[in-house]
Image (cartoon, rainbow, N blue to C red):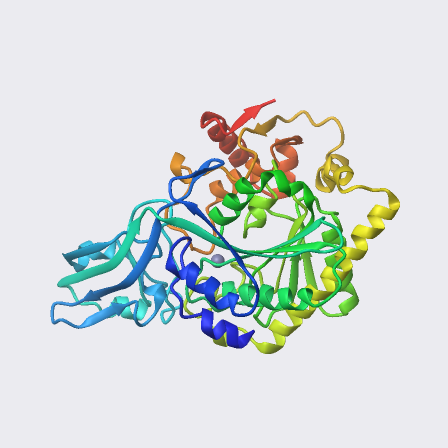
Length: 452
Ligand code: ZN
């Protein structure tokens, strides 16, 4: 896995473009991958497949002709998905396009601008402070034009056509733990599963984050009823303990399986409830799908200082921890098959468990039946609606924490399924009730929620 990470790390990936294809080429030298593409401009639920971004090189030159920032040195130096640029400008004008991290002055931040046409550079704060007033030549030699969104699937049929979905994102450039580790883990898990008896079928997805899972769900809507369990693999190589984020249902076979394996391991671990933020479980667990998909990682996104910076490099992942994660995933697959066959034996069907989420039941128990706070229903329950096109989401992605209003939107959209009142959502999320009420009003104004 370390060797594979070493090959994957230098590639300049994005949500579309040659970086994803090159990545799949490398994974294909280990496992059989079926490639899928959707043309730019194709609608997928509330979203549209974006243009294809391909970067040759981006750099900044000072007036003496010295190259002071250069993607040939590090892929993170350009804001991912920046539009092409060639201009000469003052440092003052350039400044609004520069991103750095004063608290960690030797690290380059990872920033994206997928859903708003913009451009920028990321650099260490030390580099930034060394820039003297004067004129700078800025070049982003890239193409941003209609093409395709690409993803890879590895399907391993089992005795039953009931499926386990394993998903990992393939859109991050030169970040080792998030998420070369996830790609390496699923690749080697596929090789492990390939050679053993499988009661269930396994579908491994190598997809660009967010838009990739939305596109996959749009294309495979008729098939999602076959999914009995799923896991999103991310951040699986760092030295932290394992963390399991439950599915939205909270008590699905996958939740029981992972909890059982982690408990049996006897090692420190953490189990947390579903929150509508993180990786592609946000889409799989959107209320219109509510698939039994959890997320098994080591240190979660945003909880380690190197997250989304150049310090998330190959020194952050270790063979020992990658191997431990792989072993755990392999054990979880066995446990999932046991849980599913036990449910089948008990006559408990997955659909029965799906009808009402465990968390909704728990919320009802704690707040009692006389809850008269308002209830809303999400009008776009299949995947997250695209908040950016409505001006409701920050344009530059990658930073550690979303704003409070954005979190309130995600909670409201995910749990406004008729089962959860505003006070339930407030209790589950810990979000200030006044902010929650104002945000609900805002989402009603935009037609994303209706009061019931
Ligand atoms: Zn990430």
